[in-house]
Image (cartoon, rainbow, N blue to C red; front, top):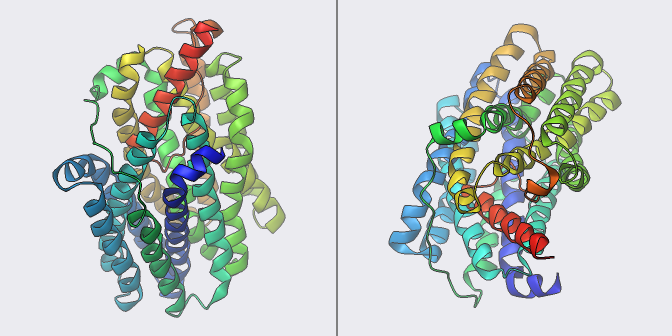
Length: 417
């Protein structure tokens, strides 16, 4: 662990500060939008725009890096993020915020691709798993810390927009001043979506549905809190609950996934998420039950992303795992773009309760499809499955490829033993 920290501390520190900025702007816009009188539908378009930009960024960033290098891409995208964060309160119009969110999503995606390829390049076979775990941990620490900072100033003013802008600007200083060499950049030619769907129908459908659920958490949780009449402190606690639970549940579920039929675990975890959605819909008027619902949903739905990748890997040759990463992330991104729009429509039609009903419906659909797939083919044996590698739904294709490499190395070591 110390070996990883000594070689990648600047990158990890920078990514944590970036996640603080990203986490703050998502929650802040949800609260400020309500103060500005934006409708739920308008806010759903604003929040969906981030994922649209993120999807384009994940496709275009590799070519940008090949053309001008890691350092220039890092600096350019970081400057853009900082500028957009400052501009949000100057033009409080839904169209302007939507445009800003597209740019922010594009830039963060490019930053993630750059950072994750850099981190993967610096890791060895012995340290890859630790590097991946540390990367996930610093991201979660950044998002949760962002929620705690929401109470530092009035969301109707400028200060809370200045803070993430400054943090994002500071995040690039340790990275760009680091003496770590920039790696050569290369990406694997992805499998087509048709090929991936044929290989793992449950993996593809699951990624689409989890993308919609993750977007509801990351994009619309603060909008829900504002519609439900929560205070700024309560909204921050509510949003943080999703991510704290994700960290707590990631490794126990990963341990289980390596020891049982992953389809059964996917169905069980989806069922728990759906029940959490019903708890939030029926009992969300009580703040403690609301936090319980957020904890259940966050703790079960976020690890589904890694579970679905691990399940899909069970039907892939090792040489094809990295190639499948881009397609899986793309499918998840499509679900994430549609998610806020669907949540906004449901909340507009039936009030705040539509937020949790949306999550419950998607997860119950996942349960039904997972059970159906169990009748279509036999599960691979435990000896035939590859290892589970934790990765966040907010990660770029590079992080998924990073996780794939770790899973391959772990599986090969297990076979040698």
